[in-house]
Amino acid sequence: MFIATLIAADQLDRTAVTAAIDKLNQAHCRPEDWHWIDEGRAADIAFGHDPGQARAILDAPGNLYDVVVQPAVGREKKLLVADMDSTMITVECIDELADYAGIKAEIAAVTEAAMRGELDFAEALDARVALLKGLDATAIDRCLAERVTIMAGAKTLIRTMRARGAETILVSGGFTRFAEPVAAEIGFTQAIANVLEIDGAALAGTVAKPIVDSSTKQRTLLEARDRLGLAAHETLAVGDGANDLAMIKLAGLGVAYHAKPIVAAAAGARIDRADLTALLYAQGIGRGEWVE
Image (cartoon, rainbow, N blue to C red; front, side):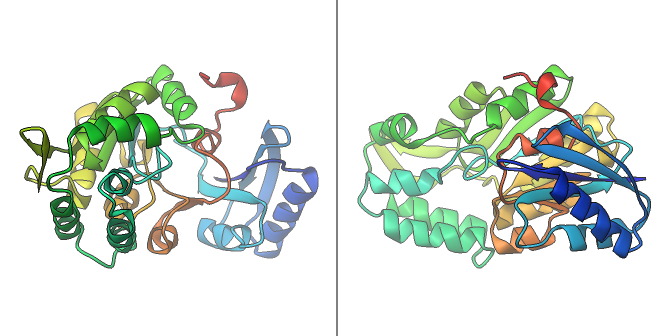
């Protein structure tokens, strides 16, 4: 059996659910029963055939809801590996840090291209960090305090999963000076990120090697999965950029969160409308069980 979870950003009505069931019938996916996870917000539809076709017909551009299609067995996950920038927080830290140097537009253009998969991530990171050489290191703490905002639903997602026994790891192609306090505030088990090198009181324009990149994220998921003795289907990965694709494809449930097109097209699930609590609904966990 499979489950199609419909998740609204605002309101999900019975009409939308019954219309989804009709689509599944027409596609011969053999829908069975359905129930609310949270009435008016998220619903599960059980069906018996062809999850790929089910996702294709339900995940339409005009929807007012997101849809996650997956096997019914093993949907609650025991390991989450998450990206940080534009996933667990609302900004790209390097772009905001560049604003303190007066070069945000220049660096943001490179960041966007790298996240779309058009540039080598490590090379693009080195090039952007080099442009920050000489910036007063106090700008890091100012940026953290003034610009970094936790993504809606992040704390609820991580704290709920941890309360249910899951391990949660933040792996960022950004910097430890942001990732470590962000991970602590949200409640992650661990944070992994790049180290910005400081020369005296200013940024040196370099980042310590090896760089945390796509392969690091994939390896982190694999090593944590093996260490915890988990099956592949017990893992969840979420991110928005091209350097998240490897871990997203590897996870039992790989989620593109408000993601770049290359990631949205390749991920097993896509969240475009709802906040990060959608990942709790995807696991069948309703609001009454959330740790707020």
